[in-house]
Image (cartoon, rainbow, N blue to C red; front, side, top):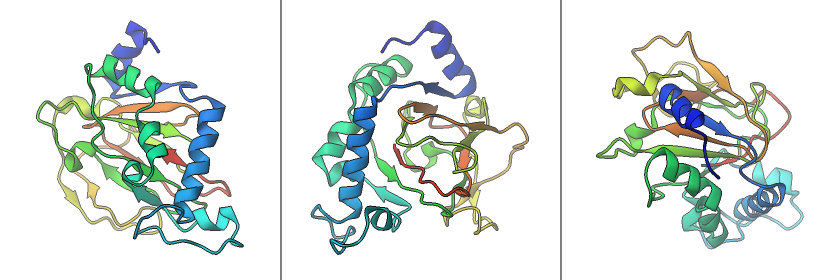
Length: 220
């Protein structure tokens, strides 16, 4: 996957870039199937308990908002986060020989909350400020079902904002929120199944509650 100079410049300017159709439909379906296996407790993990065979898959996956470090649990997920297309884009946005620092599998069932404003570099600090997220859409991500929202260009300050408890538990989960900035210029980052959103670790971003009847699954 070769990025155009315009795409690289857009990422540098805005702090995020949506690459369309980076995952094939078959790849998406295989990741979804392994996500279901994780949620059904098919792997040896003390945090993912087996569920009864008669429990429908939709009910099984609805137990979780996020599974942390799935690539430590499933060899399939380990290969998925090392996807050749994702690695190729990252090598063009950052540098060759990129490393996976963390993975997360977001299920985000209907009516589940989002996460308040934050910057990933707060949680995963890098000496060279090279942290870049790769947000692999396993479903269409829309405003209705809780897509990402971002503040374009907010990464360019090079500043990590302070955090505090938020006062909106119906909209966001229990994670702390970043504060001390104006957010009137935020934009939704809607994307289709198979798209991948790449974003700078200093970019201010959040997601809202899933108000739809659909899941919003993502591997990051």
